[in-house]
Length: 189
Image: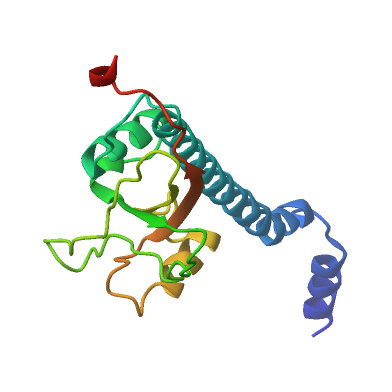
């Protein structure tokens, strides 16, 4: 028994390996913070690029560089400006609505996004605005998290699990309101 007590005291007094235990306890937490920071950075970067793409495409419409915008043409323009968005033209949904400022009707609060649970997407209202018309453009893109099993990526996927349309993705939305500037058509000159 005395021999056992002496071995226990020797074991209790030995401090070799203390750093390893601390590392094993602390490293996963710091690495998890790193992964969550990385995921949040990617989400923020994608959101900024979507906003930029929408702003640049709207500028082209507003100044007359794109006089007859169509859904596919706008998707191409937005995705061209927002180059880092993966599978952009297949995952983006646009909604363009013209409103009369003298007879105001609210824009629907529900944003239309791609439904990943179906193969054919429902048509979306897309109305071109003429000169001096107030136009609202909303773009919604579905993106997969970079790290879907850790931290923020996992919480995004978990939050969208009840929504079959999400398919393990998250949605980023960008919107713009503008008045189409009056410009002369080439036919009039």
